[in-house]
Length: 71
Image 1 (tube, helix red, strand yellow):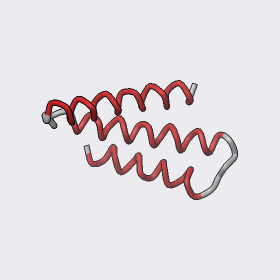
Image 2 (spheres, helix red, strand yellow):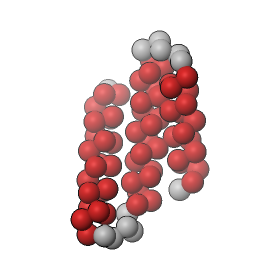
Image 3 (cartoon, helix red, strand yellow):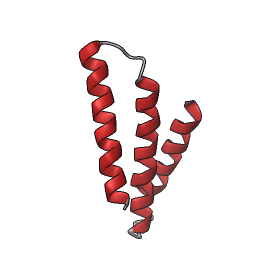
Image 4 (tube, one colour):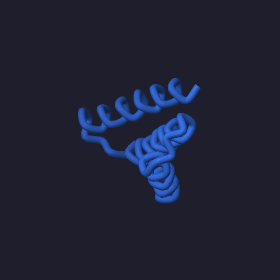
């Protein structure tokens, strides 16, 4: 489940960033940052679910929360 979400969020971020770079229209960058935060949250949860309770699992969750708060 988390792997599917991670792939979906990655594709959405790539599409939004590619659109912004090609058209030089950066109105959708706030959505890109939102989906980057969601991607980081899912990555952190996947790391914690695998019992890799190290620095990167917790840091991903903290960064994703900051990404959500900035939007």
